[in-house]
Image (cartoon, rainbow, N blue to C red; front, top):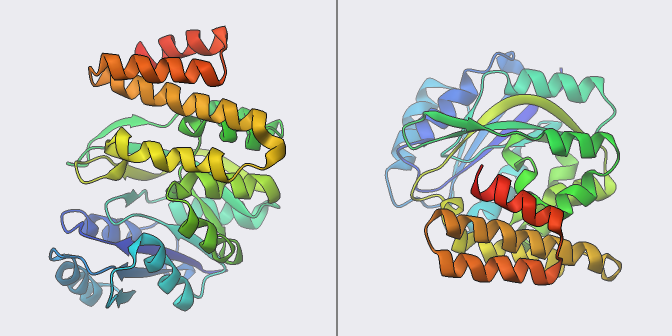
Amino acid sequence: MLKVSIIVPSYNHSSFVCATIESIMNQTAARSSYELIVVDDCSPDDSVQKIRCLQEKYDFVFIESEVNTGVNGAIERALEVCSGAYISLIGSDDVLLPNKVAAQLSFLLENDVDCVYSLGEIINEQGNVFTRQNLSEFERALNSGQGYTFCAIDDTSAPLLQSAMMKADLMREVSGLRRKFKSDDWVVLLYFLRGYKVGFQNLATFQYRIHPGNTHSDCWKTLPMRLEVPCMFFSVKESGLRNKSISNIFFSHSASLFRGHSYLAGLRFLLAGLCFGFSLKKLVRFVSKRLLG
């Protein structure tokens, strides 16, 4: 059977990295069908010591970086040594569910696709699940041939890269794109949808952890990252799509601010979103889904 390379870029997640590695080593798939490559990017905590202890227990590749180069640099170092025909990425604070490798490898071998995405569960710092992604709208759009347009407009209803498994050559191909854009999950998905065959499995394969050190827990940090994509990735001919995308980013940012009781700032971003593309349907959806939901 073709081998899968699971890459874990590790940085300063001493409290979580052991759970990440254990979840990978306890897959239902045959151990001979996948390999694990962990790259630590000069963590200042005791991540390295904990990873070394687990390396004595399990057989996996561990690379210690001499210089901090960020998550994409760590991934590129792993790509240099991995031998799998397929690649899966997982953060050192996240968890793979036991079915991840078996389910997605089987899907890729049985279907004419270049990559497959799936659902994720959202967990807190203690590992308790508090919600599961609902990607039914994305699935319908993908099945109707509108996956690219749907995800270009609404990144909040799109699957995450940790849920994916893809051909190794495809992962290597997007290395430059990942370096250019900080919102790399979204832009990589758009790149795949624009030129490759993308599949989807309506099952959860990983758990995404929300905690204070997580970038996505701060909407102000993610805002400029998200805006980079419509401003720099879309072509000149996609100006209408760009405006709708920016409008949705402002709407979702506004919702985050309202939920955090920053009402004045939230109202400003709501008005900005309306300026980029007013839609009564969008406004009703914003109130029902973003504020009341």
